Length: 360
Image (cartoon, rainbow, N blue to C red; front, side, top):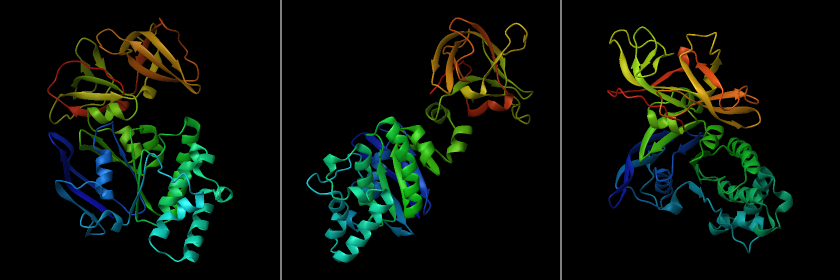
Protein backbone atom coordinates (compact mmCIF):
# COMPACT_ATOMS: atom_id res chain seq x y z
CA UNK A 1 0.00 0.00 0.00
CA UNK A 2 2.78 2.42 0.97
CA UNK A 3 5.99 2.50 -1.06
CA UNK A 4 8.85 4.64 0.25
CA UNK A 5 11.64 4.86 -2.32
CA UNK A 6 15.08 6.33 -1.60
CA UNK A 7 13.79 9.10 0.65
CA UNK A 8 16.52 11.45 1.86
CA UNK A 9 16.11 14.35 4.31
CA UNK A 10 18.92 16.61 5.47
CA UNK A 11 19.04 19.28 8.15
CA UNK A 12 22.17 21.32 7.45
CA UNK A 13 25.13 18.95 7.72
CA UNK A 14 23.02 16.23 9.33
CA UNK A 15 21.43 13.54 7.17
CA UNK A 16 18.35 12.38 9.06
CA UNK A 17 17.22 9.99 6.32
CA UNK A 18 19.69 8.48 3.88
CA UNK A 19 18.01 6.90 0.81
CA UNK A 20 15.42 5.04 2.88
CA UNK A 21 13.29 2.50 0.97
CA UNK A 22 10.42 0.52 2.54
CA UNK A 23 7.22 -1.20 1.45
CA UNK A 24 4.28 -1.41 3.88
CA UNK A 25 1.35 -3.71 3.08
CA UNK A 26 -2.31 -2.88 3.62
CA UNK A 27 -3.56 -4.00 7.04
CA UNK A 28 -0.02 -4.47 8.34
CA UNK A 29 1.21 -3.46 11.79
CA UNK A 30 4.65 -2.10 10.89
CA UNK A 31 7.26 -0.75 13.32
CA UNK A 32 10.20 1.60 12.89
CA UNK A 33 12.73 0.67 15.58
CA UNK A 34 15.96 2.43 16.43
CA UNK A 35 17.83 4.64 18.90
CA UNK A 36 17.19 8.35 19.34
CA UNK A 37 18.33 10.33 16.31
CA UNK A 38 18.16 7.40 13.87
CA UNK A 39 15.57 9.12 11.63
CA UNK A 40 12.42 7.20 12.49
CA UNK A 41 10.37 10.22 13.64
CA UNK A 42 11.56 12.24 10.63
CA UNK A 43 10.22 9.49 8.35
CA UNK A 44 6.92 9.56 10.23
CA UNK A 45 6.69 13.32 9.71
CA UNK A 46 7.40 12.90 5.99
CA UNK A 47 4.45 10.51 5.71
CA UNK A 48 2.23 12.86 7.71
CA UNK A 49 3.21 15.84 5.56
CA UNK A 50 5.07 17.82 8.24
CA UNK A 51 8.44 17.33 6.52
CA UNK A 52 9.32 17.47 2.83
CA UNK A 53 12.13 15.14 1.74
CA UNK A 54 15.06 16.48 -0.27
CA UNK A 55 14.74 13.57 -2.66
CA UNK A 56 12.86 10.31 -3.10
CA UNK A 57 9.21 9.36 -3.54
CA UNK A 58 6.34 8.13 -1.37
CA UNK A 59 3.27 6.56 -2.97
CA UNK A 60 -0.01 5.24 -1.59
CA UNK A 61 -1.71 2.73 -3.88
CA UNK A 62 0.61 3.96 -6.63
CA UNK A 63 -0.38 7.62 -6.24
CA UNK A 64 2.03 10.36 -5.15
CA UNK A 65 1.44 10.99 -1.44
CA UNK A 66 3.94 13.85 -1.23
CA UNK A 67 1.86 15.93 -3.67
CA UNK A 68 -1.03 16.08 -1.19
CA UNK A 69 -1.30 18.66 1.59
CA UNK A 70 -1.21 17.14 5.11
CA UNK A 71 -4.96 17.59 5.68
CA UNK A 72 -5.72 15.95 2.32
CA UNK A 73 -3.79 12.75 3.05
CA UNK A 74 -5.68 9.63 4.24
CA UNK A 75 -3.18 9.53 7.09
CA UNK A 76 -3.60 10.32 10.78
CA UNK A 77 -0.85 10.92 13.34
CA UNK A 78 -1.29 10.16 17.03
CA UNK A 79 1.11 12.40 18.93
CA UNK A 80 3.27 11.14 21.78
CA UNK A 81 1.70 13.76 24.10
CA UNK A 82 -1.85 12.73 22.99
CA UNK A 83 -2.71 16.48 22.50
CA UNK A 84 -6.23 16.21 23.94
CA UNK A 85 -8.35 19.35 24.43
CA UNK A 86 -8.63 19.74 28.23
CA UNK A 87 -11.89 21.72 28.09
CA UNK A 88 -13.69 19.10 25.99
CA UNK A 89 -15.30 15.85 27.08
CA UNK A 90 -14.06 12.51 25.79
CA UNK A 91 -16.79 12.31 23.15
CA UNK A 92 -16.22 15.89 21.97
CA UNK A 93 -12.46 15.26 21.69
CA UNK A 94 -13.18 12.24 19.52
CA UNK A 95 -15.79 14.07 17.41
CA UNK A 96 -13.65 17.18 16.82
CA UNK A 97 -12.03 16.08 13.56
CA UNK A 98 -15.31 14.85 12.11
CA UNK A 99 -17.03 18.13 13.00
CA UNK A 100 -14.21 20.08 11.31
CA UNK A 101 -14.89 18.10 8.15
CA UNK A 102 -18.52 19.16 8.28
CA UNK A 103 -20.04 15.69 8.57
CA UNK A 104 -23.75 15.47 9.52
CA UNK A 105 -24.39 15.35 13.26
CA UNK A 106 -26.16 12.00 13.03
CA UNK A 107 -23.16 10.40 11.32
CA UNK A 108 -20.77 11.96 13.84
CA UNK A 109 -22.83 10.57 16.74
CA UNK A 110 -22.94 7.12 15.16
CA UNK A 111 -19.20 6.96 14.48
CA UNK A 112 -18.25 8.34 17.91
CA UNK A 113 -20.56 5.86 19.65
CA UNK A 114 -19.06 3.01 17.65
CA UNK A 115 -15.46 3.94 18.40
CA UNK A 116 -16.18 4.57 22.11
CA UNK A 117 -17.44 1.01 22.30
CA UNK A 118 -14.39 -0.28 20.43
CA UNK A 119 -11.93 1.31 22.87
CA UNK A 120 -14.05 0.56 25.94
CA UNK A 121 -14.74 4.17 26.95
CA UNK A 122 -18.53 4.39 26.60
CA UNK A 123 -19.00 4.89 30.35
CA UNK A 124 -16.44 7.73 30.37
CA UNK A 125 -17.80 9.67 27.38
CA UNK A 126 -18.77 12.74 29.45
CA UNK A 127 -15.53 13.01 31.42
CA UNK A 128 -12.71 15.44 30.65
CA UNK A 129 -9.07 14.36 30.08
CA UNK A 130 -7.92 15.45 33.55
CA UNK A 131 -10.40 12.99 35.05
CA UNK A 132 -8.82 10.05 33.22
CA UNK A 133 -5.81 7.82 33.87
CA UNK A 134 -2.85 7.77 31.47
CA UNK A 135 -4.08 4.60 29.81
CA UNK A 136 -7.58 6.05 29.37
CA UNK A 137 -6.22 9.25 27.80
CA UNK A 138 -4.20 7.11 25.42
CA UNK A 139 -7.40 5.33 24.38
CA UNK A 140 -9.11 8.66 23.75
CA UNK A 141 -6.23 9.73 21.50
CA UNK A 142 -6.44 6.43 19.63
CA UNK A 143 -10.22 6.74 19.27
CA UNK A 144 -9.87 10.27 17.89
CA UNK A 145 -7.34 8.99 15.35
CA UNK A 146 -9.28 5.95 14.12
CA UNK A 147 -12.74 7.59 14.08
CA UNK A 148 -11.73 9.36 10.86
CA UNK A 149 -11.01 5.97 9.29
CA UNK A 150 -7.60 6.79 7.80
CA UNK A 151 -5.85 4.37 5.48
CA UNK A 152 -2.69 4.73 7.56
CA UNK A 153 -2.36 5.54 11.27
CA UNK A 154 1.02 6.84 12.46
CA UNK A 155 1.90 6.39 16.14
CA UNK A 156 4.92 8.20 17.59
CA UNK A 157 6.17 6.41 20.75
CA UNK A 158 2.51 5.76 21.71
CA UNK A 159 3.18 3.97 25.02
CA UNK A 160 6.20 5.84 26.37
CA UNK A 161 4.18 7.89 28.89
CA UNK A 162 2.63 4.82 30.53
CA UNK A 163 3.96 2.76 33.43
CA UNK A 164 5.11 -0.81 32.80
CA UNK A 165 1.91 -2.62 33.73
CA UNK A 166 -0.37 -0.27 31.78
CA UNK A 167 2.04 -0.38 28.84
CA UNK A 168 1.76 -4.18 28.69
CA UNK A 169 -2.05 -3.94 28.74
CA UNK A 170 -2.09 -1.30 26.02
CA UNK A 171 0.19 -3.36 23.79
CA UNK A 172 -2.53 -6.02 23.69
CA UNK A 173 -5.17 -3.31 23.24
CA UNK A 174 -3.34 -1.78 20.27
CA UNK A 175 -3.14 -5.14 18.53
CA UNK A 176 -6.86 -5.72 19.10
CA UNK A 177 -7.80 -2.26 17.87
CA UNK A 178 -5.65 -2.58 14.78
CA UNK A 179 -7.27 -5.89 13.94
CA UNK A 180 -10.82 -4.63 14.54
CA UNK A 181 -10.36 -1.29 12.77
CA UNK A 182 -8.63 -2.88 9.77
CA UNK A 183 -6.30 0.13 9.50
CA UNK A 184 -2.61 -0.05 8.60
CA UNK A 185 -0.58 0.98 11.68
CA UNK A 186 2.95 2.39 11.55
CA UNK A 187 4.48 2.77 15.01
CA UNK A 188 7.75 4.49 15.88
CA UNK A 189 9.56 3.26 18.98
CA UNK A 190 13.01 2.88 20.50
CA UNK A 191 11.69 0.07 22.74
CA UNK A 192 12.65 -3.27 21.16
CA UNK A 193 10.25 -5.24 23.38
CA UNK A 194 7.37 -2.99 22.30
CA UNK A 195 8.21 -3.39 18.62
CA UNK A 196 8.63 -7.17 18.91
CA UNK A 197 5.29 -7.62 20.70
CA UNK A 198 3.27 -5.32 18.42
CA UNK A 199 4.54 -5.51 14.88
CA UNK A 200 4.04 -7.93 12.00
CA UNK A 201 7.31 -6.62 10.56
CA UNK A 202 10.02 -4.31 11.88
CA UNK A 203 12.45 -1.99 10.12
CA UNK A 204 15.57 -1.31 12.21
CA UNK A 205 17.09 2.11 11.52
CA UNK A 206 20.46 3.53 12.48
CA UNK A 207 22.01 6.83 11.40
CA UNK A 208 19.22 7.42 8.89
CA UNK A 209 19.62 4.09 7.13
CA UNK A 210 17.56 0.90 7.13
CA UNK A 211 19.70 -1.88 8.60
CA UNK A 212 17.21 -4.75 8.33
CA UNK A 213 13.51 -5.37 7.67
CA UNK A 214 12.09 -8.61 8.98
CA UNK A 215 9.48 -10.32 11.14
CA UNK A 216 10.17 -10.14 14.89
CA UNK A 217 11.16 -13.82 15.02
CA UNK A 218 13.60 -13.63 12.09
CA UNK A 219 15.00 -10.31 13.32
CA UNK A 220 15.81 -11.92 16.66
CA UNK A 221 17.07 -15.23 15.29
CA UNK A 222 18.96 -13.96 12.26
CA UNK A 223 20.22 -10.40 12.77
CA UNK A 224 22.17 -9.07 9.82
CA UNK A 225 25.07 -6.96 10.96
CA UNK A 226 26.68 -5.89 14.21
CA UNK A 227 24.22 -3.07 14.95
CA UNK A 228 21.05 -5.16 14.70
CA UNK A 229 22.61 -8.00 16.70
CA UNK A 230 23.52 -5.62 19.51
CA UNK A 231 20.37 -3.50 19.46
CA UNK A 232 17.65 -6.16 19.23
CA UNK A 233 17.94 -8.11 22.46
CA UNK A 234 21.05 -9.02 24.40
CA UNK A 235 23.76 -10.81 22.46
CA UNK A 236 27.27 -12.15 22.86
CA UNK A 237 29.36 -11.23 19.83
CA UNK A 238 32.62 -13.05 19.14
CA UNK A 239 35.17 -12.15 16.46
CA UNK A 240 37.40 -14.76 14.92
CA UNK A 241 37.89 -17.14 12.02
CA UNK A 242 34.95 -19.37 11.09
CA UNK A 243 36.56 -22.67 10.15
CA UNK A 244 35.42 -24.69 7.17
CA UNK A 245 35.71 -27.77 9.39
CA UNK A 246 33.47 -26.21 12.07
CA UNK A 247 34.04 -23.85 14.99
CA UNK A 248 35.09 -20.23 15.46
CA UNK A 249 38.79 -19.74 16.19
CA UNK A 250 39.03 -16.73 18.53
CA UNK A 251 42.61 -15.45 19.08
CA UNK A 252 43.71 -15.85 22.68
CA UNK A 253 40.60 -17.87 23.59
CA UNK A 254 40.42 -20.97 21.40
CA UNK A 255 37.87 -22.62 19.14
CA UNK A 256 34.25 -21.90 20.11
CA UNK A 257 31.16 -23.84 18.91
CA UNK A 258 29.92 -22.64 15.51
CA UNK A 259 28.59 -24.19 12.33
CA UNK A 260 31.11 -24.96 9.58
CA UNK A 261 32.13 -22.12 7.29
CA UNK A 262 31.72 -22.13 3.52
CA UNK A 263 33.86 -25.06 2.42
CA UNK A 264 34.11 -23.65 -1.11
CA UNK A 265 35.87 -20.49 0.05
CA UNK A 266 37.66 -21.94 3.05
CA UNK A 267 37.82 -20.22 6.42
CA UNK A 268 35.87 -16.97 6.90
CA UNK A 269 36.95 -14.16 9.22
CA UNK A 270 33.97 -12.48 10.82
CA UNK A 271 31.58 -11.97 13.73
CA UNK A 272 29.14 -14.47 15.20
CA UNK A 273 26.43 -13.84 17.79
CA UNK A 274 25.12 -16.17 20.49
CA UNK A 275 21.99 -15.26 22.48
CA UNK A 276 22.27 -15.56 26.31
CA UNK A 277 19.42 -18.11 26.47
CA UNK A 278 21.36 -20.42 24.14
CA UNK A 279 24.39 -20.65 26.45
CA UNK A 280 24.45 -23.39 29.11
CA UNK A 281 26.65 -24.33 32.04
CA UNK A 282 28.99 -27.26 31.57
CA UNK A 283 30.85 -29.19 34.25
CA UNK A 284 34.17 -27.34 34.66
CA UNK A 285 35.83 -30.51 36.01
CA UNK A 286 34.06 -33.23 34.06
CA UNK A 287 33.78 -31.45 30.72
CA UNK A 288 37.35 -30.83 29.63
CA UNK A 289 36.13 -29.84 26.17
CA UNK A 290 33.95 -26.95 27.42
CA UNK A 291 34.99 -24.07 25.13
CA UNK A 292 34.93 -21.31 27.77
CA UNK A 293 36.03 -21.24 31.41
CA UNK A 294 35.38 -18.21 33.58
CA UNK A 295 34.23 -16.64 36.82
CA UNK A 296 30.71 -15.44 37.67
CA UNK A 297 30.88 -11.65 37.92
CA UNK A 298 27.26 -10.64 38.54
CA UNK A 299 23.71 -12.04 38.71
CA UNK A 300 20.45 -10.20 37.99
CA UNK A 301 17.23 -11.95 39.04
CA UNK A 302 14.06 -11.14 37.05
CA UNK A 303 11.61 -13.56 38.66
CA UNK A 304 11.17 -16.09 35.87
CA UNK A 305 14.84 -16.05 34.92
CA UNK A 306 18.29 -14.84 35.92
CA UNK A 307 20.85 -13.01 33.79
CA UNK A 308 24.39 -14.12 34.66
CA UNK A 309 27.58 -12.32 33.61
CA UNK A 310 30.76 -14.38 33.40
CA UNK A 311 34.25 -12.98 32.92
CA UNK A 312 36.41 -15.08 30.60
CA UNK A 313 40.18 -14.64 30.15
CA UNK A 314 40.92 -13.32 26.67
CA UNK A 315 37.56 -11.56 26.23
CA UNK A 316 37.25 -7.85 26.97
CA UNK A 317 33.59 -8.08 28.08
CA UNK A 318 31.65 -10.58 30.18
CA UNK A 319 29.70 -13.37 28.51
CA UNK A 320 25.98 -13.21 29.31
CA UNK A 321 23.75 -16.23 29.78
CA UNK A 322 20.15 -16.66 30.92
CA UNK A 323 19.08 -19.38 33.35
CA UNK A 324 15.47 -20.23 34.33
CA UNK A 325 14.42 -19.14 37.81
CA UNK A 326 17.06 -18.29 40.46
CA UNK A 327 20.67 -18.63 39.34
CA UNK A 328 22.23 -22.04 40.09
CA UNK A 329 25.58 -20.37 40.83
CA UNK A 330 26.88 -17.56 43.03
CA UNK A 331 29.17 -14.61 42.23
CA UNK A 332 32.80 -15.73 42.29
CA UNK A 333 32.05 -19.29 41.21
CA UNK A 334 34.22 -20.94 38.57
CA UNK A 335 32.07 -22.10 35.65
CA UNK A 336 32.37 -23.62 32.19
CA UNK A 337 30.16 -22.48 29.32
CA UNK A 338 29.05 -24.10 26.09
CA UNK A 339 26.35 -23.90 23.39
CA UNK A 340 25.15 -25.77 20.34
CA UNK A 341 27.12 -24.86 17.20
CA UNK A 342 23.92 -23.93 15.33
CA UNK A 343 23.22 -21.23 17.95
CA UNK A 344 26.23 -19.22 16.76
CA UNK A 345 24.87 -16.99 13.97
CA UNK A 346 27.24 -15.39 11.47
CA UNK A 347 26.28 -11.71 11.42
CA UNK A 348 29.15 -10.09 9.56
CA UNK A 349 32.15 -11.03 7.50
CA UNK A 350 35.16 -8.87 8.21
CA UNK A 351 38.88 -8.60 7.67
CA UNK A 352 39.42 -7.94 11.40
CA UNK A 353 41.28 -10.54 13.44
CA UNK A 354 40.77 -9.01 16.90
CA UNK A 355 38.42 -10.45 19.48
CA UNK A 356 35.34 -8.59 20.65
CA UNK A 357 32.51 -9.66 22.91
CA UNK A 358 29.64 -7.23 23.26
CA UNK A 359 26.07 -7.33 24.45
CA UNK A 360 23.00 -5.16 23.86
